[in-house]
Structures are given as C-alpha cells and as structure tokens.
Image (cartoon, rainbow, N blue to C red; front, side, top):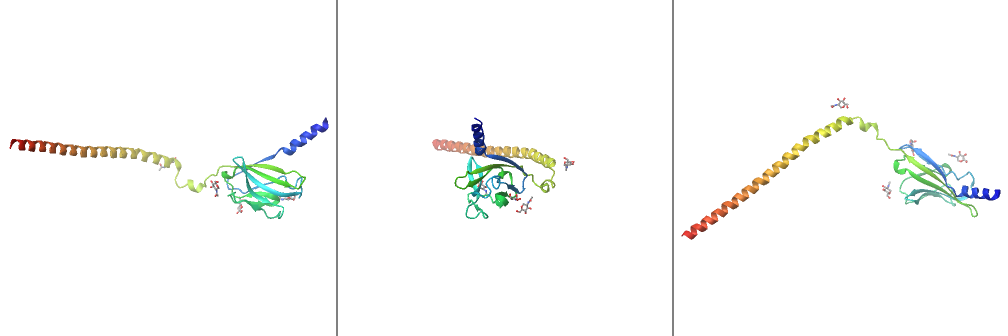
Length: 196
Ligand SMILES: *[C@@H]1O[C@H](CO)[C@@H](O)[C@H](O)[C@H]1NC(C)=O
Ligand SMILES: *[C@@H]1O[C@H](CO)[C@@H](O)[C@H](O)[C@H]1NC(C)=O
Ligand SMILES: *[C@@H]1O[C@H](CO)[C@@H](O)[C@H](O)[C@H]1NC(C)=O
Ligand SMILES: CC(=O)N[C@H]1CO[C@H](CO)[C@@H](O)[C@@H]1O
C-alpha cells in the first residue's frame, strides 16, 4: 500500500511543471534560468530548448542541440533578439512589458530518460518615460491651456457656421429674385406681345 502511494506521488512530481515567477522592471536585462539542467540530469541530455507561450502555442526561441551544446541555434520565427547565457539560461536584454509572458525551458533526455521542462513567468513593469520629457511644460498648465483654446475655438466654429449659412441664404435669395424678375419680365413681354 505504501509503495503504491509513493509511486503515485512520484508520478505527480514528474508530470508537474515547475513554475517560477520573475519580476523585472522596464529596460532591465533578464536572465531566465533553465532549472532542469545540471540538477538531476547532469550532461545526460541531448538538447535544451527555450519556448515562449504565445496564445497557448509554443513558439521556439533557441535550442542547444546534441551536435554543439555550446552554440545555440535561434528560431527565425521568434522576432525578438535574445542571447544565450551561461548554463543554458535565456538572456533577454532591455525588457519591455511586451516581453512579459510564460517561457518554457525543455530538456530533451537521452533515450530511456524523461524529457523535463520548467516554466518561468516573466512580468515586466510599465515603462516610465524619462523625466526629461516631463520638465519643459508642467502638465496642469498645459491642460488648462488646452481647455481655454477649446473654449475659444467653439465661438469661431459657430461664427463660421453662421457666416456660411448667411452666405448660402444670400446666394439662394439672389437666385430666387433673379428667377422672379425673369419670370415677371417674360410674362410682361408675353403680355406686350399679346397686346401688339
Ligand atoms: C544590459 O546589457 C547591455 C549589453 O547587452 C549593457 O550595455 C547594459 O548596460 C545592460 N543594462 C543593465 C541595466 O544591466
Ligand atoms: C513581432 O511580430 C509581431 C506580430 O507577430 C509584431 O506585432 C511585432 O511588432 C514584431 N516585433 C518586431 C521587433 O519585429
Ligand atoms: C553554472 O553552473 C555551474 C555548475 O552547476 C555553477 O558552478 C555556475 O556558478 C553556474 N553559472 C551561473 C552563471 O549560474
Ligand atoms: C503660467 C502659469 O499658469 N503657471 C502656473 C502653472 O501651474 C503651476 C502649478 O500648477 C502654477 O504655480 C503656475 O503659476
């Protein structure tokens, strides 16, 4: 009975993905550790691959293969420049909130062994714009200036509309009056013709 229980817990330990959370601030250089390497397997693995989970899909980043464990190969699809760090760590320099997400390190075992992976959740804090940008124009005054210009712009807009309406009215009036004059003229000329 005891043996069965320990066997079950062992299975659970093996299937569970180790998860680690890493907090980083904007523009920091972050090195994500592949915990599975070196601890249990030693050099008994054939590959180490880093992935990023994007919309539940594993997107390959880089892989150290069996041929050359010193030089990793980079996946072209992953369009963010990263570097390899010591002990199969993933080095992401100058991180931004876009780099936040779940990264997976997968260790390919030798035949007969078991592949292992661990997960690292990276959370990058919001980037604060440098103070240099904020100093030249204090914000409260800028907003009050904006609102005052909006207030000024509204009458200008209205006077333009009214002016436009007045113009159209004038044009319409003159057209109507011209038409009336012509109508009257043609009627009177017809009358004159009838008279003669
Ligand atoms: C991050 O790494 C780059 C070189 O890749 C270095 O120039 C820069 O100073 C590092 N930044 C920090 C905050 O360590
Ligand atoms: C990477 O690709 C995504 C879309 O797949 C795009 O939004 C992003 O701008 C790209 N980044 C770079 C650095 O090319
Ligand atoms: C890499 O692993 C070796 C052996 O486990 C250790 O001595 C060394 O400090 C590690 N290097 C880094 C940068 O973690
Ligand atoms: C020109 C002007 O209105 N300056 C003001 C900007 O706002 C600060 C504080 O909000 C005031 O102290 C300034 O007088």
